[in-house]
Length: 81
Image (tube, rainbow, N blue to C red; front, top):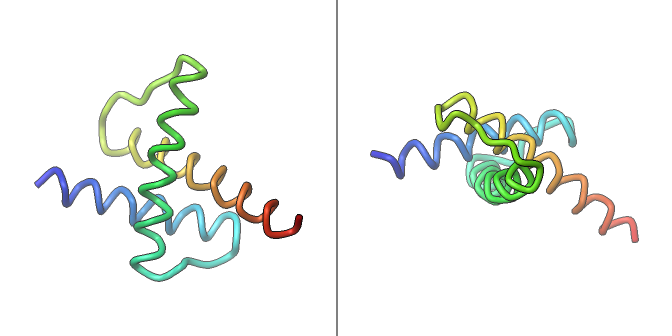
């Protein structure tokens, strides 16, 4: 069951990040991939700052969304260069 939660968090975070940064989603698979990579990046960034989520669903979505937003901003900057 935790794998399904992992995919759900990735889907929600990817969709939120795509909506906030690009103005639209990337499709189900794209949102999941962006959300999962964003979750790893967000967890890394939060640990560098000494922060952590409470381990709940909402905290996980927030961390993953912030990581996905950072990921999309980095990708956009690299595309311009």
